[in-house]
Length: 115
Length: 112
Image 1 (cartoon, rainbow over the protein chains, first blue to last red):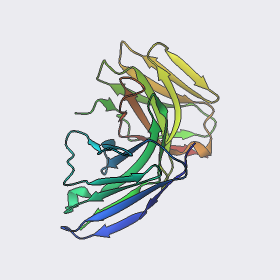
Image 2 (cartoon, rainbow over the protein chains, first blue to last red):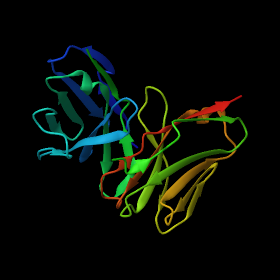
Image 3 (cartoon, each protein chain N blue to C red):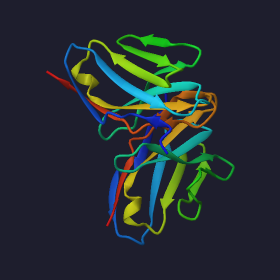
């Protein structure tokens, strides 16, 4: 298993500002994922971040809005840029390995409110 | 366009009785299905999965049933316990290497 922590756990931000969310894993992992859960909606994959390569973004998500860093095998950041109230969501990072969807582990999430 | 649908936002069940959580999907390419459980302020944790070659998978009190022709799966918890109160997410993927598509979740309340 993997233990994942996220910072901050929650934040309230003003529109037009940016927030960087940190994800720390207690072991080295190749694949890290960032998800968003808007109020009343499902978990939606934003991007996959593999160490040593650029993040791969899902349809509807772009790097300018959600830049991701993956400097090493235990850490990643997601920035929510130029925020609007529609960005109010829970953001979760997760880790997994290819071929094992049932061993994907999630962090506790960051609850973001944009005023 | 929701590919994985959980049409019941919440469900209340008496302790000791059976809890049945339902899930429907629209993508016939889905081949692997999962259930995750989420407590408040925690991330989802994997609960049980089923491959499309099976119609039932059991793990202790938890059983998942898959009806491919109806594109429907269900999670049965029996007997239900207070610690089962949580949000349950149904999820699906075309194969175990692919991204996972989640439903909106069903909040289960186990009543004393």
